[in-house]
Image 1 (cartoon, one colour):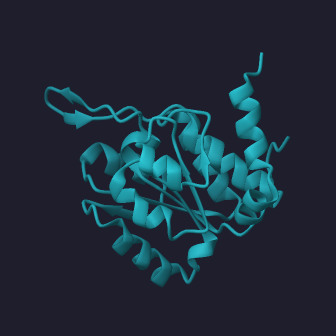
Image 2: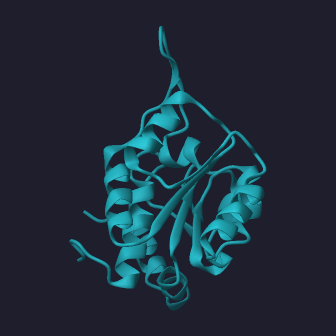
Length: 183
């Protein structure tokens, strides 16, 4: 059964404004904690802090990149598990360890030549707001803080760390008619 929230979310992605924004996207930038993960961290003896990443999100990013859309991560944190995951996914643009995410966005713009309108960003916390307000398309997750939800163009149906990134990656591909497996 499809919930009314699911239908409302799907319909929002189909609005002319959102579709026009998604059609321009050349790069998807992502926060890590709370977006690519569910925000929890775990201590493993002998390994240190670690997080859970969802395979569905990772596969969605690989498919998106195979279609020519670049991916970046911008995170205030910096840890071995995040570095290893981004290397495994072959993420080209990695900016870790600075909560001033606007600086990272400016570096992405400078290195790629993309305009802010060609960049999508997903974030969930207060220090994500400057980037959310500058890019062409912004999304957040249902458990984001209210000021972020108020500023983002779209709030995902899926939770961070549980398919939210895949939801946005698929929406970009669908809006641009990029395969594979479009429905």
